[in-house]
Image (cartoon, rainbow, N blue to C red):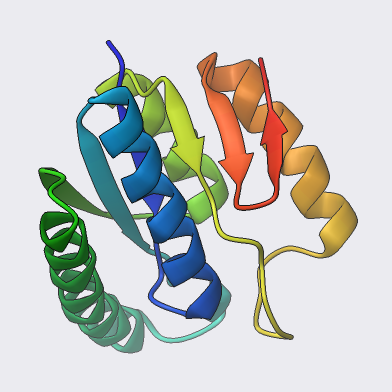
Length: 146
């Protein structure tokens, strides 16, 4: 199934990736799904009660980001849906891509010190993601094929 999957976290780089995903879905006339993964793995040494609270906050924030992304697509004449999941981003993204049978994945580049990825790690992850999912993996400036 042809489908564009765009994981988003709401930052500047995510908006740029969303624009690319919207344009691709419009050009290819395929469904678009925005994905938010509530990843609280950075709290791995924190009390369980705190993790539950943070997961809830991350999920609520994700719902808002997804609502805005779907609205932006709608303004461009693209019908988009959204998915929200909880888990470790690096593990959850390929699972969701396979589940939805995504043909294209559009990712924003990691930004800032808070990023889960360093640049070299990110490039390797793009390659691995393409191989694991069979999807074409894009950033706003680069394409990686399976």
